[in-house]
Length: 315
Image 1 (spheres, rainbow, N blue to C red):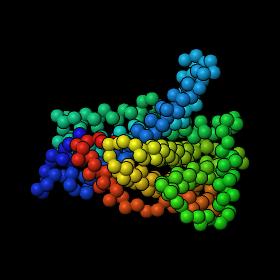
Image 2 (image 1 turned 120 degrees about the vertical axis):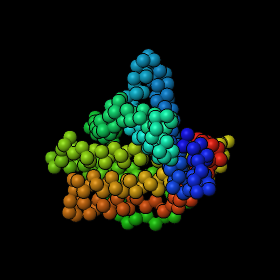
Image 3 (image 1 turned 90 degrees about the vertical axis):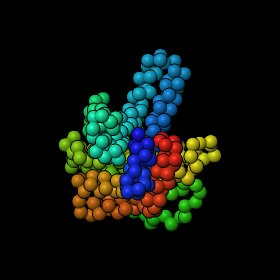
Image 4 (image 1 turned 60 degrees about the vertical axis):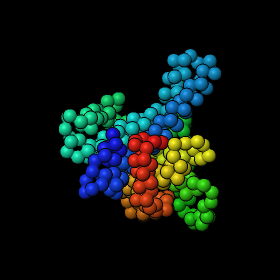
């Protein structure tokens, strides 16, 4: 709807889709949708595989489905939160592109804007789902179902060593490293918070802001990794757009996610650490958020051009 209107609405002698501000909106809508869709495809496949595995072991259809849902509860919370917030972003920008008529109930942009709002409330508010993500992670760790202590200590040890000067080679090497580093940042923050909790210096039940920071880091990591896996898989396959368009979406997303990861990690760490410990943690954040700068203007324009030529979603 937004692409169609941007192509047909004329201002100052040309379609408004020619303007950089509108191209930014169209491209960002597409990038976030592509990330959400990639995460949904990934999760549904994982759940399907888990259900098949449980069925092969003799579980009933209902029990296998339940086991699958329980195994991927965190991912499902991520999808609910991220999907609903991407939707809200898109309907808001669609209305903005339509301008005054978008606000009128005579046009579908207004209905989409109004109808979208409930998604962040039902099926568990996004705030509840964010807290559930972190709660589920720590519960699994305490039950011994998931080891976060070992990897967290490995990250702590890495902080005391000299940074690696290795040159990254191969397709998507920078993106692979960025996703790996996102995991290290999360382990550092979550591990630090868990240690403070065990030492009796922190009660995470009363630190919802920290939980929200951690949850947003989970979301960015899962969306970025899902997107990377999908773009890698598309190499050499028949697809709607040239590979460079998919690469552009991936690079813009990771570029922006790196900034969000830095902010959320810094906010969380400053909430429960201080002095030399905080300084060490912040050095870690700086070390693990070094994705190289991307010319996001050019990349977004490439995505917007593909959308405008196709007249809508084309990925």
